[in-house]
Image (cartoon, rainbow, N blue to C red):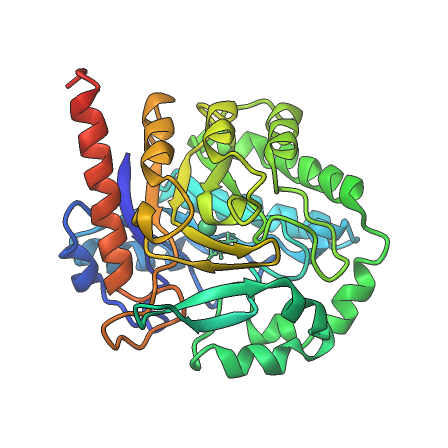
Length: 357
Ligand SMILES: O=C(O)[C@@H](O)[C@@H](O)[C@H](O)[C@H](O)CO
Ligand SMILES: [Fe+2]
């Protein structure tokens, strides 16, 4: 496994590459071109510039998180073909630059959703949290204002101002899209990019929906073992894989993460490993990565990855805000660094005890 940290790119991240380089065991980052709108081409020159910035700091680009998919592709509008052609060109340019892992998601309109970006935990840290009752009261048309107030002035992934100002039109465009249509459009997209992925040995990792159930009346499909297995079978090629995100899949306690890891064996190019604390059926909050701080068994998760031969890119996911750090919610340095080292500690122990090494 290759331990990394997510880095948002020059000008977008409060964490520097120099800081990331000092986290033990972290040799690479997963990054993106933040300024790009979904549907646009990433040129070779832009990719090489990003690559140079990372490599000049002594790190590597282990993969891209994310090359976002436009709503036109998800809905299947007449702009879909052009956007897919642009996506293929982007993959070609990434492949030429030696980048072989790409994360994306297929959530309509929103990326991840939380009701609280700074809930205070008993230890005084603040975390992202989700409460269904609060979300049920949010009028999606006014979400722009609420999110802007909550995000400390940072741009949140998937919640870019450009997208939020088109909410009403977007909801309208999705009105006939149910789970089956969305799934069909996802398969269509994956089939269309097969050739370029195979040519450049690019492994695509779809990120699960977060939380793992439909919200605001919009369909969400990458949310449990059944859908994941169905998707892996529908395009049964090594390039079609998943980003195993424990926090997203784990938002639904009915999801057995270790079982999903086993079911997706060999098809997990990327893993996001973090812990959550369930407070009730309708409320969860993020926790430190350490098992005892939340509700998940991180040792069992790392062991399932180990035992299924996981050889992909991995990163800690959302961290708590601790020690007075001011950063994009979930993406400070300190708690993610603790997470990266803890996960490597688990892996080292599992590896040594396996007797294989
Ligand atoms: O929850 C997060 O912050 C990330 O895991 C997602 O934003 C993820 O990058 C996207 O869904 C993948 O496209
Ligand atoms: Fe994730």
